[in-house]
Image (tube, rainbow, N blue to C red; front, side, top):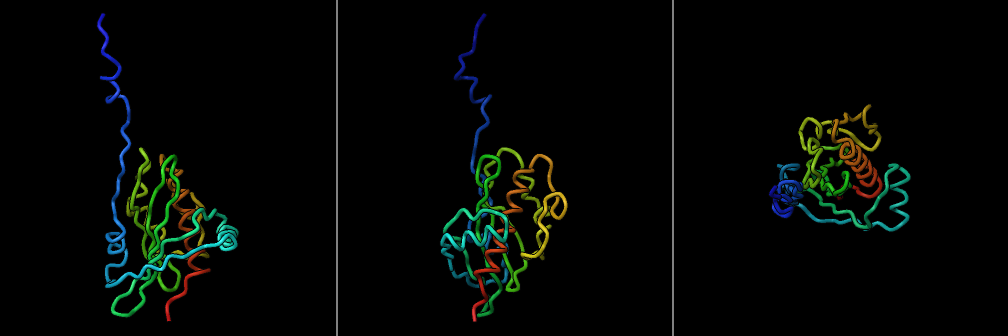
Length: 178
C-alpha cells in the first residue's frame, strides 16, 4: 500500500491564517465621516491613573497607554472624533474604528481588520448598527442590549466591551475644540 508523504497533504489539512484588512485608517475615516475635509491626529496619552479610571467606569480594561484619536472637521466645523482600537477576538486582535459625535454619541463603527477564522459576521452592517446613537450611559449587556451572534460570541462581547470603554474614554478626556 502506498502512502502519500505528509508534507504533500499538509496544505489541504491546515487552515491558512491570513490578514483580512477591510479598511485603512484613511478609508475608515472617509466611511465614518464622509463630509469631513480634514482629520487632525490628536493621540491621547494615558497614564496609569487615567487607565484605572477608564477601567473603573467602563468595567473594561484599558490595555493601551496611547489611544489613537483624530478630530474630524469640515470647513472649520467640528464633526466629532474618530478613534481606532483593538480588542482580542478568540485568538487574534480585531481592529475597529468608532466615530463619535461632539455630543458623545456613536455615529458609526467599522471593522478594519479581522484575523479570526470564524465570527466575521460582526462586520455586517446590521450588527454594527446596534451601536448607533449609543453613549457612555447606554446599556451594553451582550444578549440584552446588544445582540449576540452564534459562532461569534467572543468577537461580539469583546467589540461591545471595547466600544463601551472607548465611549467612557471619550466622555472623560475628549472635549470639542473651542
